[in-house]
Image (cartoon, rainbow, N blue to C red; front, side, top):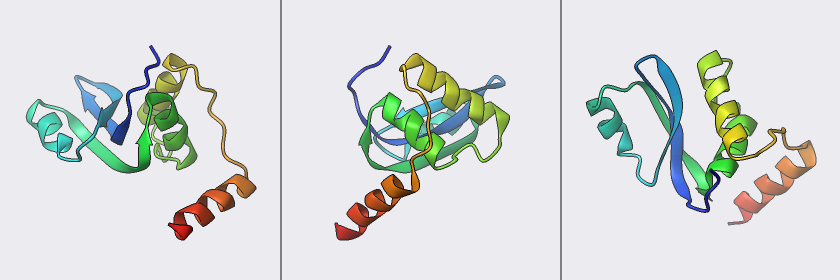
Length: 104
């Protein structure tokens, strides 16, 4: 299921009681999801365009779920489908990433 297609916006929504990760390249996707009956829509801009596997890792690292079980399960399901083992970045990796962002 893993693809090389990239997205610049990702998040979650709930439809018919099922919470799933949603992907887009435009934050206006929120309006379309809401119009189609999705609830609890929450999308975030990604730091760069990412594949679905990278998105799963990113959402895990930033604690996007914030303890919400349905979102935790959705992120874990996305990681499993894309053969990604979720792991927190080390403090050193995080500092290097932060320095790279500041340098831009």
